[in-house]
Amino acid sequence: MSVRISIGTWAFLFNQERKIPFDEVVKGLHELKFDGLELGGFDIHPNPDNTPTAEERAKVRQMWESRGMGCSGLAADLWSEKLITAPDTASYMNTFQKNLTFCTDLGIDVIRVDTTEDPWVLGDVPGETRPETVTTQVDYETALRRVADTWRRCAKMAADVGVRVVWEFEPGFAFNKPSDIFRVLDAVNHDNFMVMFDTCHADNVAVEGARQPGEKETLPGGIRELAERLKGKIGRIHLIDSDGTLNEHKTSTHPPFGEGRLNFDEFMPALVDAGCPDDWWTIDLCFWPNAWEATAKCKKAVDELAAKYAP
Image 1 (spheres, helix red, strand yellow):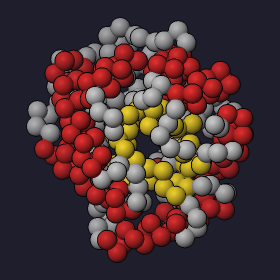
Image 2 (image 1 turned 90 degrees about the horizontal axis):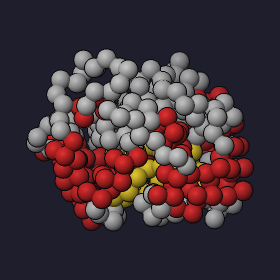
Image 3 (image 1 turned 60 degrees about the horizontal axis):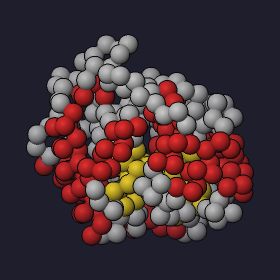
Image 4 (image 1 turned 180 degrees about the horizontal axis):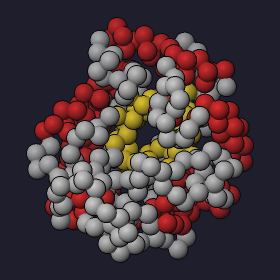
């Protein structure tokens, strides 16, 4: 097995009876023989605001490094920012810079972003009522230009300090059609900007066409075809099952392995062949209740996938 396995720490914050403190998470993951973690930089877990000093950040880094573990990336809290509907991106860029500095202080070399706004900002989503949070809609080309220009600047800033920017496409946020993914990549047009390929989101985007404005768009080859067409553009792999449904947060349900419908044998060869700049595979149990109880089961499943498919 030649991959390292991590899990997103946000799983232990969202939809849990008790938010699990970060030190407990690190200790528990070490006991389960994880190679590392992917940090959700918000809420009670370490983030730029509750861990402001260099000394505090050094202590956080030491928590995993002292156990021989790594950190595969940072999920940055950019959700209060308007990436598409705000003509001025100064606030977004300031928040991105704050999180980028946090990355470098903790020795993290991947930062996750998303489009921050509901698909409704690009047009009406069939079968849904327009959310109260969406007060403005933007024409597609204007939205694409704003996103691409901002993320190109982010990619350049991050490249200067050795941090890769990865975009997690998903049904909960705008630009969630397969063609959107390719158009955004082409528009940003920077080697340091890639996608995060989450197998659950890929199912809802390429197979279900979930929450897509206007006409639904899917791919005949589903997850496998999406991975094939993103060859050379995948900067982080997230592995989890999917049952093709959405949760109460209007994004993909992330059921533990064996509790969904995905046939990993059907697409894992294509996903591995698509390539990735590093050797991390990350488990994502986002919003799954009692996530800690499912963690060992998921680790075993990814160990088995790694034994079978890891390059």
